[in-house]
Length: 200
Ligand code: GRF
Image 1 (cartoon, rainbow, N blue to C red):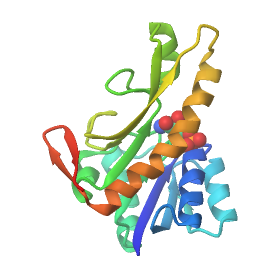
Image 2 (cartoon, rainbow, N blue to C red):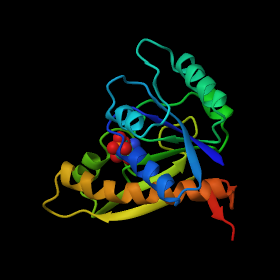
Image 3 (tube, helix red, strand yellow):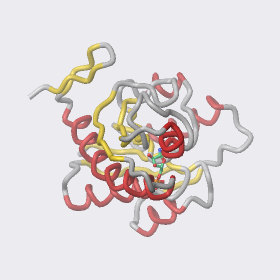
Image 4 (cartoon, rainbow, N blue to C red):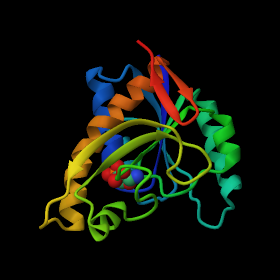
């Protein structure tokens, strides 16, 4: 059975969706470890309630790579095959990325490459786009930048606020993260430049 490692910082709804997909067999893997860099992350509490191995490794005051060495060591001890960032509010160091080449996924609430970084839904509304959405991509050392696995499109309505748009996008996030994890675990793809080409 393949092993997933989750990194999160907050609410953890994407993590919960992944855990539910694992429970019902939509994802054929187990969640080996959940790590939060913030002690009070709701996702950590949820993970514990689900009986998963859940740990806080606080990041405050640590250099980026220093922190990443701590989390990578735990991931390796647990035999993690695929690392899933689920609202993890830190950029990974190049060192961490090298430990898991093409085996780290992230979800972002916009149609990348539009609106990387923080408050993507607010950026979308302020820019006036008619459509936004969400993206699951492989992680490299740049912010919200690696090859794209899956995307979903969400229409932006005139009366949308950041909160209403975020809520609609989130429903799609929960669905496409599972799809992306299945693709990544299946190994049935090839990366050509920036393109993830699916193999049948
Ligand atoms: C999501 O919008 C995700 O796309 C972004 O951070 C948010 C995390 O939400 N990377 P949650 O913690 O999964 O509920």
